[in-house]
Length: 384
View 1: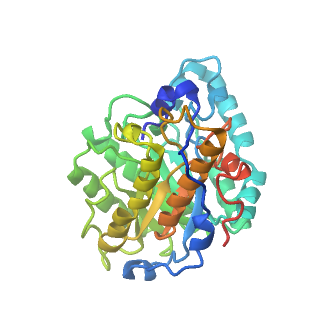
View 2: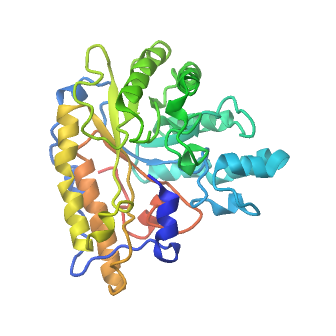
View 3: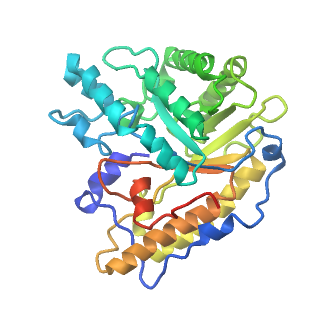
């Protein structure tokens, strides 16, 4: 998912959603009262509650389009380049951002909104930072402790790997996809994951450890599957049995049948990310077609849940391409924002859970969960 590239192409950098003649029906507030079928694998999983959460994006792994102020005075496209450009000033600037962007007040807000989980992106440099990165271990400690105090579960997500697993800025360093090309990168990633398990694996707030965020579909499946299988025992030996091992589908959602099956692999969760704003086909749909497409994604989600593994939607947002929205009224725009939120929640409530991308940005946006709730595009209370 190349979020920054999408924003560059959006008109004026502003994301707008709309649909003629449609109203925002609050499906999501009613669906929780209806029975949801749960696959046998999910019933046996220690993480039994449906997860409703947000990503704490651009806090410990920076994304320029989300927090442009942190990049002020530089032309850096990613965190690696920013730290390189700032030199000795990098630590102070990044720590100021980390101390103020997400605070104890934010965890209380998340709890009061009725959510029960957060997904925390971190880089491979989180605990031991090679130059020019700045480590952030105390902020992971803070996030886990705040999660415990507020009754939240935390999914620790390895968002950036050495060599970059997708070449996008949110991997820490944009450019070539070198992660799968050098076995040393994969071995270092395994070591980092094991260090996460050793340090945080017994924390009562830890929901799970996600092995790698959005590995490119260009990576041969056999390399990625071997990495996932190698990571599992290294984590299982140092984390609590209730801690889930989570892996991303690499944008190949139906490629995981018979992969890491029980009982040899216990408490494994498949993560998929669902957006409708990046692809060429996304830009050809009308707003009404976008809503229909969103509703029809349930079939694939059901196939993943029942034919593969318990599934979460680890990232989603309210962003849609804006090229076909110019002639719509403000009321129609608001209606589609609500309807798009509702159609997604209607589907995602049938999975093991979901995490909106992202909790907050420096500015109003359909990517900004807090703003979306406060402006009525999302429900005020998710504890229903």
